[in-house]
Length: 358
Ligand code: PLP
Image (cartoon, rainbow, N blue to C red; front, side, top):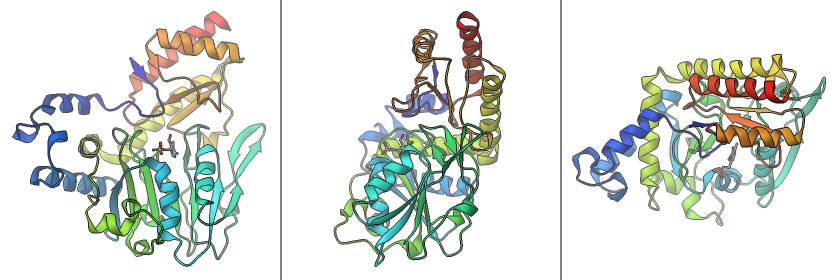
């Protein structure tokens, strides 16, 4: 089958095969990795290796710490303000779609939020205001934004470059899809279940000077200082997800790192958008500069045909193509693990469906 699900998403076939081979006897321990203590030397080595590989791929500077959390990206929606507000009482939240709004709503339980909508219309298409026009408040503890809005299929490709501003970014659906300059961010976080591994683990990359200012009410399991001091093993970590994330990091390395991933991802997205653009049947409503290379949304001429598309696609072994319930239409999530062959298969199906229903 061809899996276009937004998450949990398709994983690299090579990684799954390796998991299958070593599932019952991992590293000659005579046990499965998920049966072993997180405190044992085998898992410890595996955990450190994963962090070293992630640091190498993302080119993470030494003054940034990698933490492994639970509770998904949504736990970070609360963990971020509670960890780094310090004595400040407000934060800037950029609203670019569904997930950035959710982050703002959660943070508003803990601080005053300055929410700013940056979604604009350009010739009838959805676009995002350039960062130079974002208005940030001097007394805000940080600015939060979401570079890739998974549901809306909107991506912000510009990287932040604000003077004296701590930038927090939710990279859940675009981490490891292309190189980024980590030093421009204070905190990067991402649920693993799209570009990294199985659900259940969340990667948090934090600049070290932001650690140590948690509010008293913050649960210990989300306190960056406690996580750091305990090598992200204060509570029992999701060992299987951590191990598999490590395999995915190695897979990315083997393909040539993030530059190579970016080329692959741009090529896949371009194929799909080009096909949509030349068609009179399908359309995408995002301005070219903000079209996501991870989540490609598209509509047929009406809702009934959308439904028919999803149903017939499923019969043709295309999984997870239905748009999110709040957005409607279709969405092809083409994360790192999706290859060009899968995209071509989808385009062939779309062409055929258009012929029969156009
Ligand atoms: N942020 C973004 C950009 C997402 O795409 C998602 C999930 O789809 C979330 C946050 C929520 O993640 P989680 O379910 O890991 O809390």
